[in-house]
Image (cartoon, rainbow, N blue to C red; front, side, top):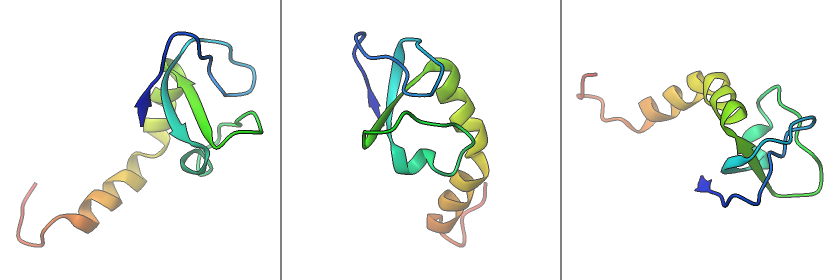
Length: 74
């Protein structure tokens, strides 16, 4: 995940807001958001990045638990 410059716009169809984060298109494939075709990276505005985090919360928690040591408590 990369912070992008001010010249970039959000890569989600129908959005033209200023982008704040850059993700791989592959990470967005599990969400309901439609990305403009033609790139390996997708830049997201603040709203869409927040929506991405909400939609992938369960997946990220599973990944974290997978690498957490068995004896550690939350």
